[in-house]
Image (cartoon, rainbow, N blue to C red):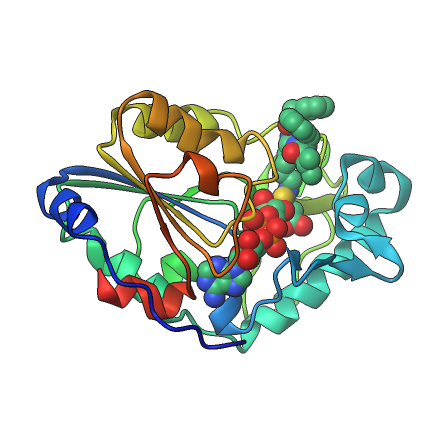
Length: 244
Ligand code: BV8
């Protein structure tokens, strides 16, 4: 990962950070990149699994068509994650919960690294790779880092699927609503490590902006959200966040 010249932090943003009481942080795959978690896009290409673009293997249709293939994709990513740790960006965001009166961390990531870094009450918009859910009774089961994952629902005996939100599926009930509420009432919104292409998550900074919040993007690349941000800090989250 290319180390970039760290951006200077505008005085106006520093003042906003000092004054802000309610802060929203929206993160995407980029916040985990410095931990070694591959992003889905970046460098002009997007992730492919066994010849299938990620938004195909990670789509609702695949669960009914080929659940074992879906499990293979998430088992592979979970195995990768077992040896990876939170990075400076996750750690800074965790520290912010003592810095701001009300901090809401909303993530598109299913990797659980924010929680591992000490962030509480993280809103996981797209679920978690560390949980399985029954395809018929929706019972949820934790997947441990040490034992093999369960295949069958202990409550009704039907098959389990990853407890993540696949493309074409609705977000967990209440998750987006809680995030949208926090966006509508925050004074400062950080958009960290997301390409801003997946909805409804990418709509949250717009909600914050419309409610009068100051929106700050942290990303080594420009995104469709950059133009509507008050501040764009071009760099790697693990290097930029400690400057704030
Ligand atoms: C839904 C879980 C209702 C699984 C994921 C409106 C317009 C257009 C399309 C739609 C729309 N509304 C709905 C849709 C359809 C679809 C969608 O948005 N499609 C997109 C592709 C156009 N949305 C849905 O299907 C959603 N459901 O809307 O339900 C409905 C139902 C039926 C029909 C219609 C609507 C559900 C979406 C959730 C899917 N599940 N994840 C899994 O993990 O496999 S999405 C998954 O991909 C991630 O969770 C994440 O959200 C997304 C990847 O995006 P990013 O996280 O941003 O990562 P990316 O790699 O793209 O970018 C990384 C960024 O980091 C880059 O900018 C890079 O420069 C930067 N970076 C790199 N290194 C660093 C860094 N930044 C900082 N520091 C670094 N070191």
